[in-house]
Image (tube, rainbow, N blue to C red; front, top):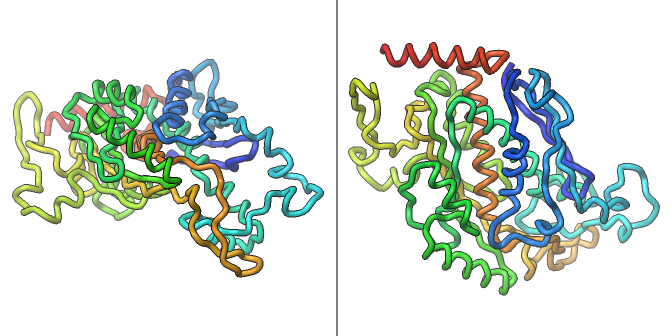
Amino acid sequence: MSLRYLTAGETHGPQLTAIIEGLPSNLELDFEALNFQLQRRQKGHGRGRRMQIETDTAQIVGGVRHGRTTGAPVAVIVENKDWKHWTSVMNVEPVEGGDETKRRVFRPRPGHADLNGGLKYNLRDLRNVLERSSARETAARVAVGAIARQLLGRFGVKVAGHVVSIGGIEAAAPNLPIDELIAVTEESPVRVADKEAEQKMTELIDQMKKDGDTIGGVVECIVSGLPVGLGSHVQWDRKLDGRIAQAVVSINAFKGVEVGIGFEAARIPGSQVHDEILYSEEKGFYRGSNRAGGFEGGMTTGEPIVVRGVMKPIPTLYKPLASVDIDTKEAFTAQVERSDACAVPAASVVMEHVVAWEVAKAFLEKFGGDSVEEIQANLDNYLKQVEAY
């Protein structure tokens, strides 16, 4: 059984729900660590008022008994604390009243799913689109990814994320062990290890907020401790770097992805792009560099995975852009929902967890078993095979 999940729920509905299928039995879950990851998603300089309302915690309501997975589907819910203010607007039962009572949205916002979704699903109330297309859904994906992260951690795999740039401000590349990178960036309001860049970034975000504007940036995810050979070269949809790229671009407002040195590879000669293969008795086969970001031929090389994602500025602006009323077809300025001036630090956390999910999925495809003990035995046997090669 392949690892998979589905999420359901709206941004102002009662809760977000996720169902995970394919987890092995006997995985011991750390509930505090799970909720810590959800709390990390809510942090970051530039977040809006929604983060003052919600205090996200995950409640597991199926598939776990006495702290361990049973092998059955795992059901997770994350309550929306703001639901109490939206019970009439978002009620699943029919309600009395017109557009004002239902808070109907009829002026699509540029940069959102509003108009496309309304046209596709033939909806005259665009709230039916924006409620689901909201980035609030990523809370469920972080909960799912946090469980996948614990699965990977059981086998020595670590995941870290940090901000590379916000606007035009670049943070110095952190040359830190992964545990230290995790600790240092967790203390930063913009998730960087560069204090000078941190100050400039916070000032830029404050200026954007003052101007009623928004700003985007670039984030990076690193995964260490993986063996060679996750993913495969034999079919396009089994290439792990391709699957990770799709997952990253699926995050709300993400418009680009690169692996390793990424687009820089188009500007320099091949001698400065490819990673030379070396060998020692102690390490076996290894690479002299990691410009490929841990991948060759869609498979892991044994070096850390390094992936970056590009997040556009959030399209909900307090100085709204022009739009068109879907009823009258007249020009209006777009309606404003709550918005962040910058969600790049939070998006870094989301990216960590969608990457963790794809890596965990590939890990189970390679070493799969019905229990963590069986997976460990399969992994041990494979590592002996690689060592003897």
